[in-house]
Length: 349
Image (cartoon, rainbow, N blue to C red; front, side, top):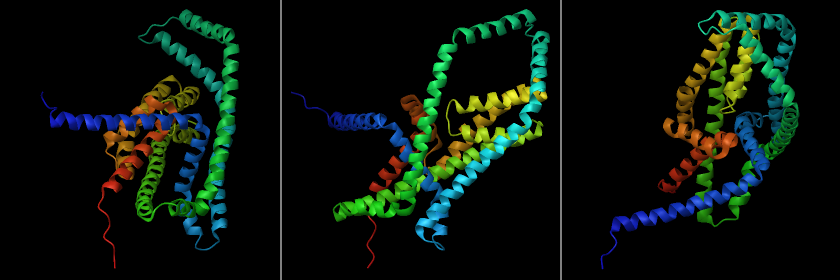
């Protein structure tokens, strides 16, 4: 009777352990999917905590802890609502001036299509518009249902945002004490290791949050420069839209491109609009394949290829939510593994 080769035994041992880990991960993520609103609320609270902890730590030198937390959150809300108010007033002040140019831009686009090498006839354009109107009329019930579903999604988002703010108050004011309470219930040896692992994981998550903001800011700044150079109205509100869309993989980019193209078409005509439609995706590709991997690889200490693969796999497995949380999960998992494999620190006498 032949014995099983040692290499095959070793491969089988690793294989069944890997399968057990995959089954455990599947069970965990399935359970979390049932309470996705709570998960995203806590995730948002952790993001706010990582973002505001430096400001809170600075303010704690001069005011009590609770007041430092309140001032930090108020400053954050003030900045957010201030930016949104600026964008709203900019849009309200210029949208009326874009109506007539928009109609003229549509006419210029139609004329350009009929005289371009495409040789699209005016009758074909009219027939296409008529088909769009018929489709909207026939599917208005379904569109209304989707609008109601979108309203429910907005309500769910606001609920998650409120939960994130609520949890961030406690994380900022006493997150270290909360962890110390949990760690204090563990045996001393395990508590020491868990403290090291948790500290490494949190520093990695902070790097991810700050790296994401840096990537979004750089992308928005490049788009703002391009739009201002092309003399496109609402350049700064459109750059803000690009900044926000950077947090929405897959669909965020097309939304920003469509909005910028419509505004450019209304104000600068179809040629400049076509330039914007070409340039913004190019900028997005630079951000996605150059800036994001480079900045993220330094922030979360992952190779650019790992970052790119994490985003793709997260999108395929979990959709939008998976794309958002894939990089921090992989980064934290790698940080935990690295910390567990690191040699124990030499005790100082």
